[in-house]
Length: 268
Image (cartoon, rainbow, N blue to C red):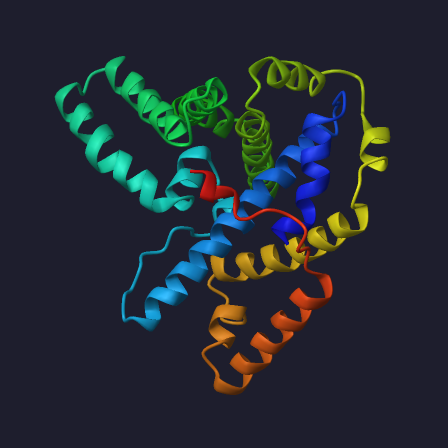
């Protein structure tokens, strides 16, 4: 699924003049990274289990988080825990007062950004996430007093979260800082840029990837809501396990895109 949507994302970010549609493309890139990174994490955990090694979970349905802090508690959990345990908590214990507490939280996220590489876009990625983590609670508390239906408030919160991670997605992808600033500017322009999306290569593969992503996220939602009718629970039933494996193998052979490079996170 990640490889199927990769071509359109790369083309949209690097070879077009951008536009409002980059919000959608950036969110699709976040989904691509999620599928790519989660996919090879599951492969690693599966191979380790053959040797009776139980590797920890690295993802817990992050795209259904209600805020940025919760997102990072569910995304790349091993890295987040390491930075929290060995950098953030020791420094906060030594400097518990504001503004040091907030500055330490922002600095910790900048370190998370720099972990991906010595590039200004990664510094900016960490800085933006750090600022979102610190300013989300006070903004949320202000909005909580606004009279509103509980369902509407829930939808608004989740959409706001997706918009934030979409904005962070383009920062993560484009390493050329001048191009990054240019493309980010088009996201706030009146240019839709849809003609560029229509001219993109591999649109059929992109559509197949989005369909697979929808099915995947639906299963993620079932797991997030503790509904027992999901792939993980079904795979514990012997007959269904073999059926699921066969279905996935056939789907990969029929719809997989084998003309792209390896896992994104092997770069890091």
